[in-house]
Length: 406
Image 1 (cartoon, one colour):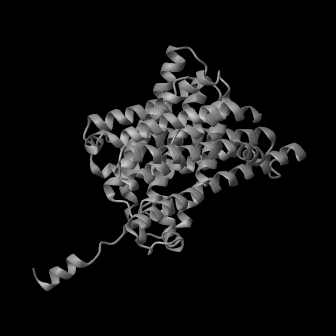
Image 2 (image 1 turned 30 degrees about the vertical axis):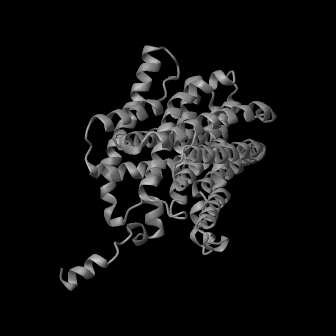
Image 3 (image 1 turned 135 degrees about the vertical axis):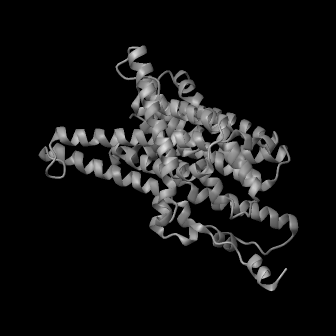
């Protein structure tokens, strides 16, 4: 090998994310010059989403005779996406558009959901729901870590599954992985576990929760928001619940509850990372890793969910408009009541469309063939953790959920 070849081989690969500007990274996930690569996958998902909405209306309105279809377009789009991606071989060029949908459009949808609630309702629900969220987070961390140890799985894998189960699914796993220096396959295993059980919950929990709480939408929303792992999965399940049972409050409560969980990333991820590293130091009798070194590896900026802030800002916007309607009959000094209500409805409907598109992207991005070689034990950890967290959440919501009048 020549000296020039050796230099090229030794040269580290550039990180595409670091080469992007903040706006490029935040809004698109690709450079401006690569925006066209998003279009093929985006077009496929949008087409699937509108087909799902059409099919939902055909089944629910035309065939079943309902004024509003109880067959959620979100559910149809997710299932069709899963079938298409696992039956047919999709071109790799579509994956960039799918990733854009799942990462960016989903978060925009969550931000726009803030228009459904006043900021006062958000804080009231969030503050009262905190004890339930804390109980579920603590239980998830303890139970998952215990099960992982009993099944003799790698500790890094256990840490990743624990934060994914307790906080924010895939986002929490991705944020924790570099801090504890997890191997690529360990990160993939944890993401696979969260994905599989989250998809099962997205499809099954909207119907189970109705019978668990007798149609109480507030308690149902609390349970969905605390027992399902990933934000996309919680929102998808809550939309299915709201559509099928015609209980939109369930969506509002589930969304706020999940956003409260997401905020705890700021505390839980550094804590779990520190405990893992402290344990490693103890086992190897090395003292190089300290609290300060852990903090230096934690990117706190990435632990603050920007879409949570966006959700709150949109809620503030809604609240200001409502105050204007109630005091002067004009929102922001120029929108009459009917116009303001119409604007709110347009934003709500657009957010719903974004969620249908996003869940279609989740389905089209999920390849079950990648899960075959992972082994059964990580999935057993995920299964027992999901079941136990569901039970703990049910008990907590049953005891404390009645305190929330929404």
